[in-house]
Length: 358
Image (cartoon, rainbow, N blue to C red; front, side, top):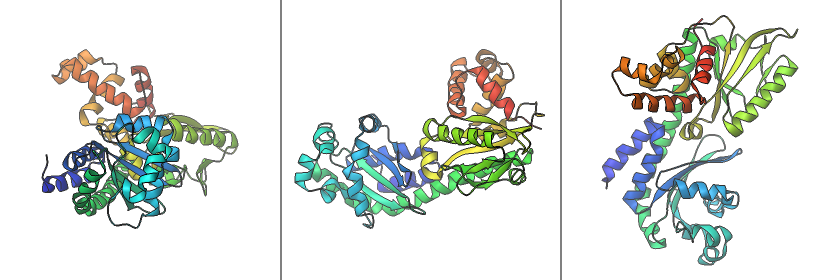
């Protein structure tokens, strides 16, 4: 079990590396007697959640059965959002409510996860983050965990702010990398509105693209309908899409590529839906490994594998050249598929040729 100082160090590590929040929540649970944790973001779009490995299976089953739509635990927490600490289930529900409310009676209590401790961290605008340590042995165990959790809460709040900033910096780094090779790029929020753009993308506005009040639009009505549909698909299925961009006369000049910002922690901390790129038809060479890293959040090894595959290589040949095993290359390729929203080598090759160097 980690000491308090080690927990604080792990909290700030997750702040700088947001993908480590699930592991951090398991560390918090181990230190306080829980089984895992959930981190949720609540705003006008609803509630999004990332889970720690220790509690993920049961949390996803909770969602699958639809209990998140009638979760009085969240309602109770939000009514006390100004409380500067962690609250247990007994703080937001009476004993009678815990015995009779359907969410407890039919799911939480039978699954032995009806005793938790959670806190609300107010975010920017109208959203907030809820961090919950789940599945204590009983109500007393949850209550006894609160002092340690309260002492860590200021560090957790600062780390959440840091995670948000780090995610934005990574997105901006991707746009800067594209700007250096002349590829127009912008970040779109979950509504499809431009939240940041590089100069090359800004130059496209009012020619083929329009910065609408609610979302990015195109000057051509048919293309604009396709863009609206693509944004809807991104929100529901995280599927990327390419759209032909036409001028007011209906002639096609370029393609608008929508690249999903994948990963639960990334979505939770930045509220960025996708990166939008404008590509002309003249680009032919494959993008370099550094650009692949910026575009799709790949590791250096994953970027090398992606480029080699798209150049016609196979895992065995790539492994020989890199001095590693084919199994390692296949594992790296699996991550490349996940991060680029592709599932086959020919799909990956076609995708990377779209984001080629001018």
